[in-house]
Length: 298
Image (cartoon, rainbow, N blue to C red; front, side):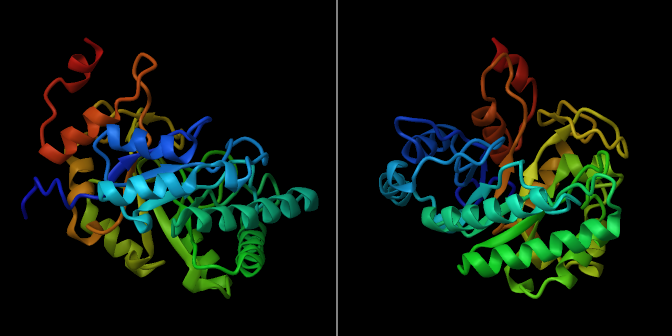
């Protein structure tokens, strides 16, 4: 396999969407990093306030994507963090279903096919209760939205009462849902390592996926190093090659042939208040690492 397939590599980062350019600005930011994919929120991740779609310059953004070789199917939306389908509180559950339904519709308006979602935290309700609530909420939202967007459940680090740190938990959610064809998985390299998986054994990990939810359900991969050792359950991202996972393992994930058509999204930390994505993407595309952060800081 040629490790320098720069034109075929689906890679990008999390980008902003701010006024006055909104989505057009998101596309411009992604292109400035050398991206062939990108991920964004359709509004603030901490609340449900959303700017109306007609103000977001979606058509202009799509036109720039088309002329720059980024396909709509290769962009990803991340759902807001306020959604918690696993909550034992009825008002939180109902709010979460409502926000998720709206996000599915907004995702469709951008032409994206994948909406990444944190499964939720049961906050004392118990794991099985949480899993059942998530499945129930997913089915309601997917039925109400009634479009072709897939919800990709993200692998979690296992902080507190998070659901989804084990592949089996994600598989059970999918099994309980009637809308199985609209459910996928978003792998996160930092989260998987922090939850206890040895991601250096990538083929063993893929076998585990196939035994549970099926590796064909992987719709997105968050590419992050980790500030903490395996099994720490901390969820603290590090820049590529400057964490406990290391460059070599992450590079294998990025170029594994099974994930060739899966968008890979960087969520690594800013360095001195500057995004490092152009440098990290270039590093991964061209298979080099030596001192990129030191050069970036200078």
